[in-house]
Length: 497
Image (cartoon, rainbow, N blue to C red; front, side):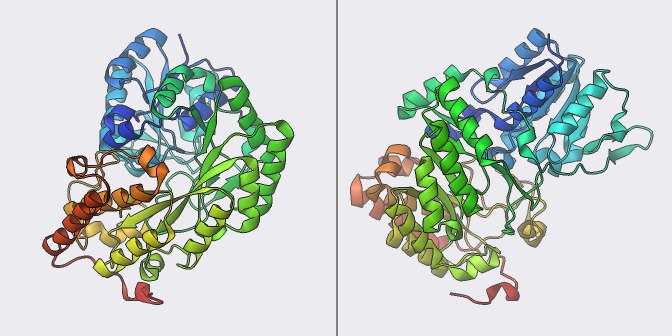
């Protein structure tokens, strides 16, 4: 029996693209919450839906642990959770129904729940934990379990249905944590590590685990949703991060690490401190991070390489300055090849996040992005289309055009949900062609990628395959144009390149 059963709603096998990639990571945010509850004497259990079917496994976990409280606590460090995929929302609603039927109090935390509080409370959740929620969960669990006499109405960071008022009540927001070192390390012992190890070894020949060195991002790209941390940025000490790296290496057999931070190496001096702390503890493992092109200075990149970094994903987004300006990205085109060159000189692979379909982008800007990719030849790319999420300037700009579908089904969906320059079919073909071309020069892309469409699978090998895919893109460019696409505000068109 457990006081609290923690779970999350992301299931790998409900996501076509991620099944092919087969890079599953434990639910880091959920494990942080579990560790804090345990530190304060609350018994916890975990149902990890990443690799286990939630429709069968979660009811069994309820029967086994008979919890008084169930917390669907999403991994807010997993970008797939931040995307608010509708298939995973359905999983969360199913968990709430099953937990309520079992007599448990049911709480939820995550990006989607923060954006759609009424929907979640209407589907069986008793409380929604808003924002950064470890301490909110602890205080609410203590209240519900009778360890304190503090009523939920006095706990910051909550939303719940007030039956007396007949409406949703919200308590004052909880301030964000500043001292992240005060949290215990995530409770990785609750996870079936061997299942993760087997999946990684079979697909890639090595075992990777995840951790974070910071929370939040201070940059204000206007399409980026931040319902948990806002524009804040808080950083752990380099010593604490290096110590966790050592534990993952020695206690759990990690052979590779993924830093799931929104932004890594924001502070150059911290990167140097990390390299020194890693060396001092013999904690070095190959790792990958995501960051920005304007942070890739020779000094920072050298420090990251010394600490073990082998791969950096950068938010390149577009090869047109006009589009970067419209996004409020805060980067310049010339910084992209400069960053790529610095990474190459230090033996670090470069990954580009690319985003097509932002309002104002035409065939001309798309061609600039393709040319940039060809000229700088990243080791890998990730292609998306602009995805409006609540709380962003971009969402407000296209809100009136959104229909009943306002979220992707899974991470491969790639649907254009507003009036873009082209229809979804065009952007999917563009993704396939660009991925196929990068695969021709990148051994890493060849190793990691799988067929994105049946057309790719059926195409001839090598250059003929790429040529056929680009021919398809050019054909669709003529037939998939929208007559009245969303345009940029005039102010966003300044400084166009």
